[in-house]
Length: 130
Image (cartoon, rainbow, N blue to C red; front, side, top):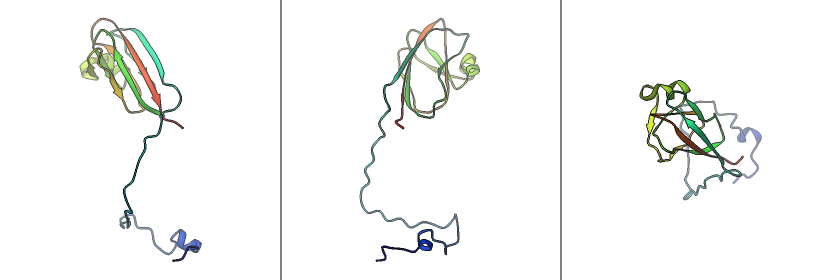
């Protein structure tokens, strides 16, 4: 067994690049994975008086977001990726029932509008560790 390969062997200089060529893989045993812990403390906020006519940004674009939980207190809400979508209701948003937590596991913006009347919307955010 050669434990000191030449630099050309390490970078495989003699092998032409071919993106369709399969790569041989050998599985030596079971693989254990662990979830990366969240960083620091979670963030909390409540948007008071969310109406049916004006979309409110519940979550900003955040590449480090692990997850966020959105909960409306008294009224169902429209959830969308844009203010216009939230304000459009069924034409551009998803209806989510009051008091049922909605878990977001992506980094994109989230906008909310009350379906009828006025409600408070609480948001908890947790980011990945760096």
